[in-house]
Length: 175
Image (cartoon, rainbow, N blue to C red; front, side, top):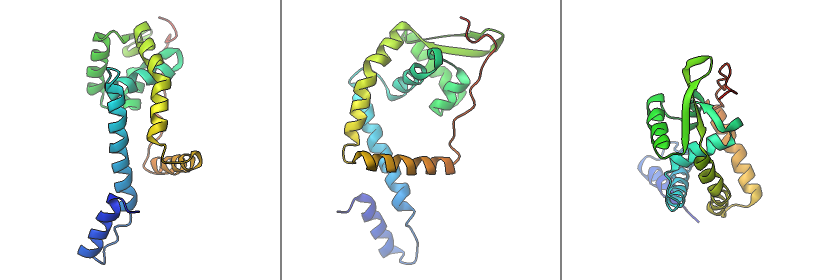
């Protein structure tokens, strides 16, 4: 059974017979899968009153030690610029989902943490979100998901994706 990418590759084969477009078999499929998965996640979260980026930030903080991170770590996790992150944190502060404060011992560093309401929202959605993601991937067996995850990990590492070193301000455990 052909998918939309097979059609595109076939069109290129007819239009430019000598051109090797085989990498498009991966790049286009990863791109299309990403958009379809993002749409599925976005629709699910919208039903629960959240934007995707809002849940991503809440979940990032939920899994962080002490449910708090510095802005630099949040920026790296969200893959957004510091300016965009500031706007996002402002929005979450206004919604009462996170707090922020200068790090003790380093007032140039800002720490962000979940509020009790932010923790409740993230905790409330966590299991349902995980189940929804499993439904989105239900076309694959568990072994196929594991194999795909391993291949995508290898691809991401080859593209330079790696965890950023965590910032640890002096006295960060204090609040």
